[in-house]
Image (cartoon, rainbow, N blue to C red; front, side, top):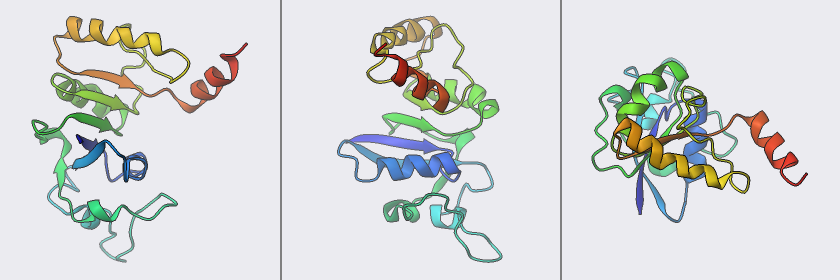
Length: 167
């Protein structure tokens, strides 16, 4: 199994990563990270409103039971030595500093726009531009990384690219 960390796990997009990776045949959610405020708590505690006890869960699907008891780590201090891949769902400002730290050793799939305009960072859309994956070798070499960063495209780009590809 590929061991994955979800950074920004308590936010809306982090929760969507958890739902998408639930029961994945190759990927095991092995670590969760978020802000200092959530760090040190179980995932369930981190997404529970203190006063009302209501869950801050934003997905239509129910929370992933397997992760509810997992500890949430501080994203800025996270040890990724036992992780194979990082799924990052953090804001661009935080991504600018944290994602290179992770990418120095591991692949990072990012939802942030922080690196979308860098010449050596491919924005991959399956079935559309797979040949851009070749940029990952250039990125590793120029930045001295073992891993890489590849951001997902924004939703408008994806829809347009898929629609226009056959034309």
